[in-house]
Amino acid sequence: MATFCKLPGATLATLSGAKVAVIGAAEASPYKPGTPSHSANAPAALRAASAGFAGQLHQFDFDLEDTLLAPGTSGLVDAGDIATDSNDAAGNRARITAATRAIRDAGARPIILGGDDSVPIPWFAGFEGGGPYTVLQVDAHTDWADVIQGNPFGYGSTMRRASEMAWITGMVQVGARGLGSGETWQIADARAWGSRIVTMRDIRHGGIDAALAHIAPGAQVLVSIDCDGLDPSVLPAVNMPTPGGLGYGDMIALLRGVAAKAQIAGLALVEYVPERDDPHRLSGLTAARLAAVTMGLMLRGP
Image (tube, rainbow, N blue to C red):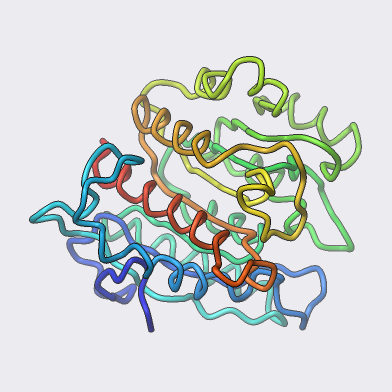
């Protein structure tokens, strides 16, 4: 299997010495059992996109303000894909949680390449026993639904399920705009729980600092990026494109700002749809670069 950024391959049983470990998951809890996730092919596509710049990772990276693979750098591995089955949502969740826990038990920080936005739910569950954690979600939608089509673990319920985990004590949701976040009661529930919803209107008025102000110094942060949090002019290959989102530079400023004041404990990158990308896979390249920069920030962070 091709690895992300051509990193050394590993298994969940061979993570000794790893500092950051990449895994892939095509899906977790689909709304239509038996139908693969709209982002099922994303882990492989993101790895393929990363190959385009993997040979340059020894060069200075202006997004990182450092060299990702400086001489002597080690501890970055790709542990492959978690086996998933669109007919086995419970099994998918259990395997994603177990894989995340295995990476953490090995002393590494996990980056999971989704897959749809139901993947972060069991990924968050794998952080049980640590924390407390703050979730930083980048998304056009708030994902505070409860049960949709009889499914409480689907991609519309991600942040509500996260809020029910005792080890997650804070939440900052960045990029909300337009339609698709459900009814008013869902937003009210999010705010009543304590989630800080930083809309794109807030970002336009206050810049990225409007989001960073809600990240406590020294916090352990779980970053969850739904690719539709970015503007479709930047990353159009998503399931629900929504105008008016974050730019690539905004994302780099946000990630670097978080790393400067807190610890990025993990990254979930979801909702990239390769079948909607252009022939040059520019959306995939953008998403892969975000993952690579985050990996560098995690490697150098506290």
